[in-house]
Amino acid sequence: MKLNIALLAGDGIGPEVINQAVKVSEAVAAKFNHQIDWIPALTGAAAIDAVGEPYPDETHSVCEAADAVLFGAIGHPRFDNDPSAKVRPEQGLLKMRQKLGLFANVRPTFTFPSLIDKSPLKRERIEGTDLIILRELTGGVYFGERGRKDNGNTAFDTMTYTRAEIQRLAKKGFEMALGRSKRLCCVDKANVLESSRLWRETVQAMEKDFPEVEVSYEFVDAVAMRLVQWPSDYDVIITENLFGDILTDEASVISGSMGLMPSASVGEKSKLYEPIHGSYPQAAGKDIANPLATVLSAAMLFEDFDLKDEAEAIRNVVNASLAQGIVTEDLAEGGKAYKTSEVGDWLASNL
Image (cartoon, rainbow, N blue to C red; front, side):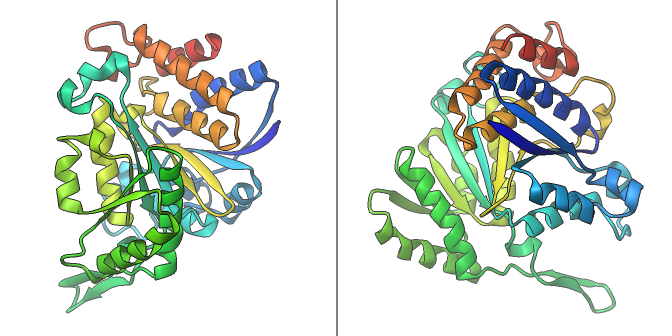
């Protein structure tokens, strides 16, 4: 198979971890007789510095024409520390999601046998955890009307959803549940928010179309609590944008490190794969960042093209690196800490 992959390294540690995912992907491609053409493009602070825009039209054209996008990270402290900045790297991420129609963020959360005791949660609470949070990406408060009034002393952000936006996300959730344990949990705040009541009634109306799926409904605050108590109780979770943003970051630490979890953002046509961590600017250029989340994001990419053996080969070599202690400093805990590039080299050579 030949794949054309847009390569958006982004900011901070993005280029370093992306480089390792490319190494591993090339090794898999060689092993299974595939060809990958990588098309680099600018985004984030790097794009602002180059052309004044965090998601340039040229980058969008590259992403739109590609079979998929492999993405690093966006963000830079000089923008974080300037509340008056009119153009920000994160605007590029929102614009990219909206223009590519990436309405569903797929965030798996699972544990690694060799790291189970590195989690901040007790072993007995997290063993067997294997869940997916499906987060709506292009609606809600992040895209609703916002502004200031009363001479700037009052600010407002509006959470808006249409039934159609909820249906397309929920449909993916139902279909995903059918391929797993047939359990789906819809997370909302229907006791307070009108938009959540629309979520709940829309999903309830869809249950008849998926009679094999057992559906539950929970408030977001209860799920935030239960995720750190009994995460293995969940299989597929669907939720809106803001709630999903918070819950997925909470769930990410179950594995023991945010540097381990991959993700995908998908639409009707485009697919983007990225690690869940940020740009971690303090580590940029030091060759110390954990590349495994980005490498596992590449595994998700292969799997979505029905290249299941290739994806499994990547996951197996990642598990082997963890078991043998070929890890970066965030996981070394007194043992040898390998450089980002060394981990990537080891993974590629051991495929």
